[in-house]
Image (cartoon, one colour):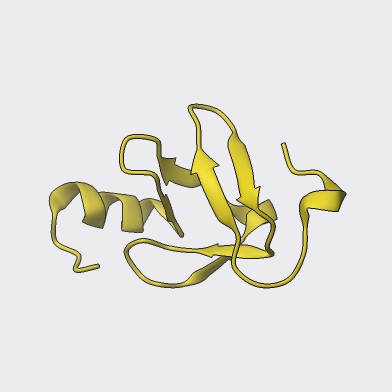
Length: 71
């Protein structure tokens, strides 16, 4: 999954796959598509392959699905 050589500071660019991530641009974190919160890559658990976006929590996922969150 994540290789120590792929880590650096700043925001990463990630391709979200079915059960894994592909680091396109190394970084330390990604931003939640709903809340804008920084999510350290080693703590990222929730994302959408279809929408290609990460989420900070199950609540953020539900907000995105229900359409109640502004981006």
